[in-house]
Length: 93
Image 1: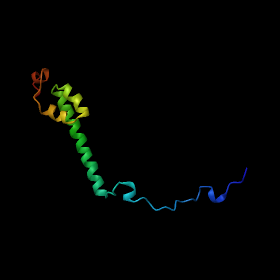
Image 2: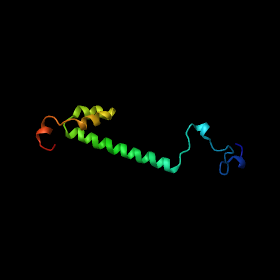
Image 3: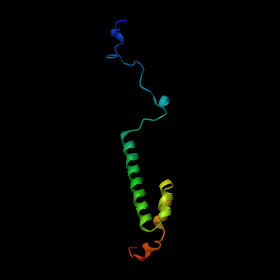
């Protein structure tokens, strides 16, 4: 076996290529404020979906809730609809 070459031991080898640019990666560089905006909007979106989903279940629209897992617009519709069956007679609405 040959002795390992000290120049290729991997300990101090650095890539000489420059960092990838936007054109190479396809992703634009976002500022910190822009990232925080998207995170904040994502949190608001998630909270609205949970709230509307729970309202849909409480009003007795189980089928709308199940379809809303895939298509969240059904949760909005189910939350706005009048309560049905036992949910309406409970007096909670």
